[in-house]
Every structure is written in structure tokens, then in C-alpha cells.
Length: 222
Image 1 (cartoon, rainbow, N blue to C red):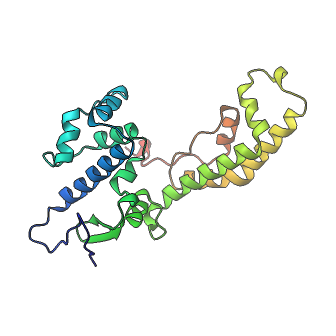
Image 2 (cartoon, rainbow, N blue to C red; image 1 turned 45 degrees about the vertical axis):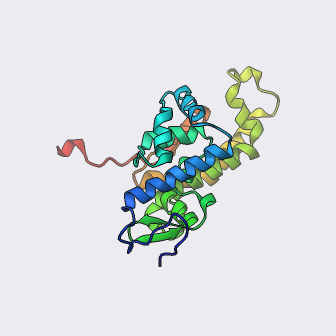
Image 3 (cartoon, helix red, strand yellow; image 1 turned 30 degrees about the horizontal axis):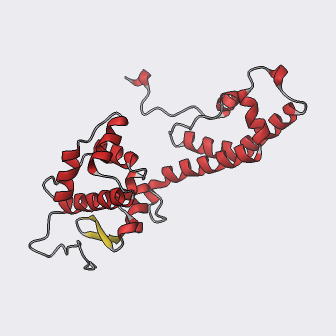
């Protein structure tokens, strides 16, 4: 069902903006709120986007906030979010705004549910299983780096002669942990035809233990 609040329209309202316009207005409200929370002017944001290599002019930002411009591009969303030190998805479905949002034209949702559906974190999003595999990989990889900090630091020592005593044993334990905890996830990614995230260069030999990456087609069949 659709719940009413300020700046939310029922899809049955004759005067309600179209769904693309409603989504864009929501993003712009989030941009405005974030800009004001940081105490920045529209020119400050424009200058910051310019420093990032893709300037969004002050008049564009002003036209968004006044309602004169009703569209925002993906590059603009990304660079403005970076200038405002916030994730783009939080501007798209900002939980801070509260209330409900139309995730699809006929799919009103609370903002957190919309955000997690968009990012593939929603538990019911079975089709986004691949994203969950990549997140699992990142979590385990970070844990291994923390648990085997000394061994991971050997990556930055160019010559084995610089290794302190006991380093080989620590490295062996690190490799064993990667094989035990991370390689199953990497193998699963390969088995369903996906690229695996890179490891430290010194662990590159572990990739030889993975199944070959499945191609979409066999060149010999062409």
C-alpha cells in the first residue's frame, strides 16, 4: 500500500509527477539536505566536483533545487555524491529522509528496503546471489589480512633477505588459511563463470588451483 507523507504521492493521484520525476525529486532532496548539513553552498559543491574531474556547474545544482531541472545523470549522481562524501545509493534511497519511496512505479517501499534491494543485500533477492558471493569474499579476505597481519606485510618487503625470523612459517599459515576459507568462495565464483577478485601478488600462484573461467562460447565452434 502507499502511505502519504510530505513529498510523497499516491500513484492514483492525477496530479502526481511521473515515477521518473518522483525518483529524481527524491535524489535532489537528499542532495540538498546533505549539502546543507555540511554547510556547503551550491558553488562549493560545484567546485568540489570540478576538483574531482567532472564539474557539475553551480547553475545545474541551483536548477535542481529550484525544480527547474528535473533530470540527473548517473555521472552527475556519482560525482556529486563523492563531493558530498556520501555513497551514491544513500542519495538515491536515503534512509535519512524517512517515509516511503516508489522503488518502481507500482512498488512503494520503505527506504531501507529499497536501498538493500538496489544493492543486492535484500535477503529475498535470490537473483543477486553473485553480489553476496563477492561480499562474502571481501569479508573473508579482510578477516584473513587482519588475522595474519605479519604475513600479509611480507608483501611489501621486496627481498626475502629482509624477512624477520619466523616469516616463512607465518606465510605458510596465511596460505593455508586462504586455501581453507577463501579458496572455496573463489572456486564457486569460477564455477559459475565469474572473475575472482585479485589477491596479493605473492598469492597469485593460488589462482592456478582454481577451475578455468568459463567462456560464454567456444571459439572453435565459430
